[in-house]
Length: 302
Image (cartoon, rainbow, N blue to C red; front, side):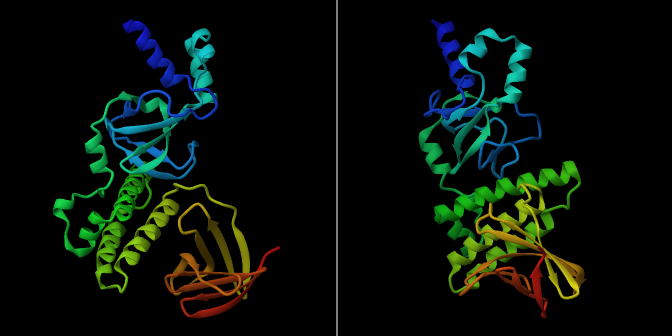
């Protein structure tokens, strides 16, 4: 009987076929077989190059199972040799949709193992930010501890920042910590805003998009080129972020700045984006650019 239960568990973990399961298998997983110093990334889709929206530390439990796809079929599991199974798993890797601390996304099934969870602890954790609310400093951090949406964004930010820190350590990217400290100070200054909640919400969303783009966590869309008098402008529109983000790059630089991130602004016609000291408006191939006070008319390259 023990062997039959064990075999059934193995089938549920590995053999999910090519369609999304209806949360078959265990109710909860734990993170397993993660190398020291690494984490399990949560993606927004079942694709290794998709956006990382959070992380799961090694040995974490209470990872809710929402169903898996890919992996070996029952026939492949019982008939293929170990090398053939490994090859098949490379061709059709297993991905599982999970919820962890309020973040729902996809993780690689090879790093999951059946587990149990204290339901009450899970509910409590899912409403808390990544930082310790007992040490909250100031009215903004207290607000984040009280507001589930802001707390969820804080957990998402923590995962994305951790992934950025890994890129810095492994691939020699720029250290994200100095800017992150500045961002936290700016976020906490939202107590001065007329709408504190909206200020904090926007602060999180803009910073998350900035980290995802600068640290290679998103697939880069095809660039759009413009001629702006004597200046060349490249616009890369990231529709994956929330809100959508455009990365504007000009050559030559103006006022020592050659690249700015900008976000949508209301416009009666066309599309308008605003970044730090930069405004960009585009409609049917014609554009206007205000870059640190310098106004330019632009035409889209055909």
